[in-house]
Image 1 (tube, helix red, strand yellow):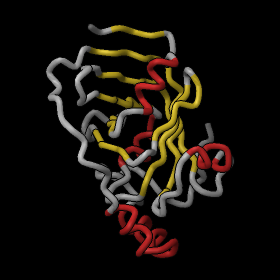
Image 2 (spheres, rainbow, N blue to C red):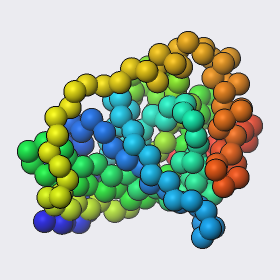
Image 3 (cartoon, helix red, strand yellow):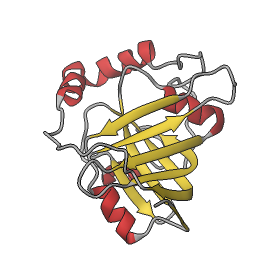
Image 4 (cartoon, rainbow, N blue to C red):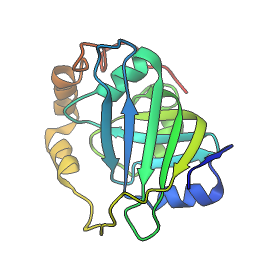
Length: 187
């Protein structure tokens, strides 16, 4: 059954490391703005400390998470087990991000494998850790990782990714600023 923890325990950190997918949820402060939930994977999540996590943000078609972090910093990360032992785990807190070249990048980025489309590291100061049973989540088997995003990013190259972000990642769907020339906050 559900439980609240004071911090991310060693047992939970090990369980998190075994999960092939996680979800991030954000929302703007504006009540008319869109709530965003985004699936993530590809060995891009790390527990940094019992109250701190980070994940590698890869270039994609949108930039809602960055825009919402800039707007209010709220972020929830959810893991759910699809194997025989059901569990849902949510990490709540205040997020910041660092981009390549920003202060903090050289500390956080080396924790992850290289991905050609890496555009930021999202850093979460965790203030709540809560589990739920997960009994309604289906049991499924993992076939394997997808490689298409890395292949797409590698084909575009650094200059192509910068141009893509300028075209597709400048603002959120609600018009909030996402990736622009403004300096990013540091963790």
